[in-house]
Length: 226
Image 1 (cartoon, rainbow, N blue to C red):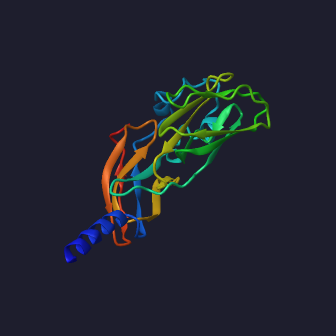
Image 2 (image 1 turned 60 degrees about the vertical axis):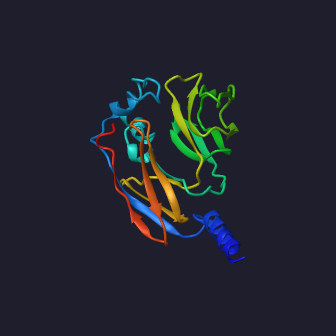
Image 3 (image 1 turned 120 degrees about the vertical axis):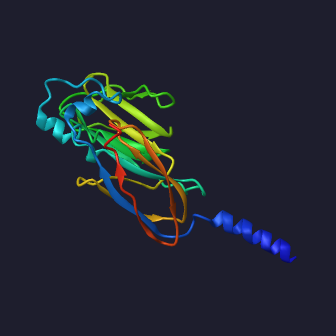
């Protein structure tokens, strides 16, 4: 009887591992010297429109990587509870704002046309192909994204437009701040894989262990990953 009680206690402990705790991970992303051409060469974007102004590029974040870097924590020792995290992408001045958003898979992205022009948003990403057709100014289209991974968007009418939906299998993620720092709180105890996403950089992944409500500092160097 004692042996069975001990065995059941081990099973219960293992099932609950990672479901308690209130840990925080924070740090700074170290970036290389950055120029607008870095993203323009990336495969995640179409060729840039040479007529676009420097101010417009600045506003949509193409030459400000800190606006588009996402940090995510993927549990390895437990299964994260599903949390719906929707997002919205606005079309304005023939540009997507923002041009990268992160969601949890099975969430909805709302595509808002706040422009003076018609837009026809589509994706050719495998397992996430869609085409919403020509949509007039003022139109809002809701698209549920089931695929986990990167979903690339374009516009049939304006080929210079491009955006990315980062669909994640974890609710633990954030976009880094303008000063290059990040913080993710409310993390259960457990083993994780930390991932960094930005289309201009090679993938960065590393293991992270969190326990006992600690604050873990993790700086990430992307200077050699451009």
